[in-house]
Length: 197
Image (cartoon, rainbow, N blue to C red; front, side, top):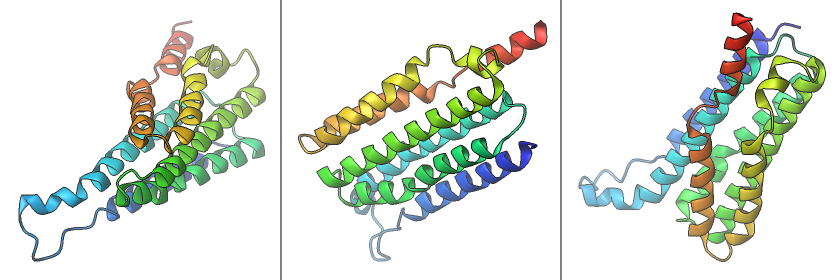
């Protein structure tokens, strides 16, 4: 099965997710025209920026993932839908944590959604490698997967820590985002090496 349809659908869903998140940024009341009136929006804007970065990271890595994928199976389709399901919850989690100024429960739920998206991405990667073989381009490129292993551990720590200090949890979310902010070049390098060989 060709992968173009899966990529186009995934890109569309991710674009809608970003659109829904930005719609949550409500303009202040029409009588509130000063810069000081934007103060109330800072937590909502901060949660939007962090979530936008996360969605961007997933979009970027999803693109690289399917650059190295030759064909798509039913298992890959379902694993991809599983990832898109958890990404589709980003607008809800983002809106709730922003509207409640990093309150413990919304922060923990935000961490849970991040954790499940990370697990879903790992499953998708694993299903593709299983379909293409351990000597496939993707299997060679991802190697030890240290980022994939650290990220869920940070989220697992951040969820209970949200009830101690939401700021520590948020720090962990930012730390993981920074880990992935620089595009993952493993697949690009492997693709380039294969072209040379």
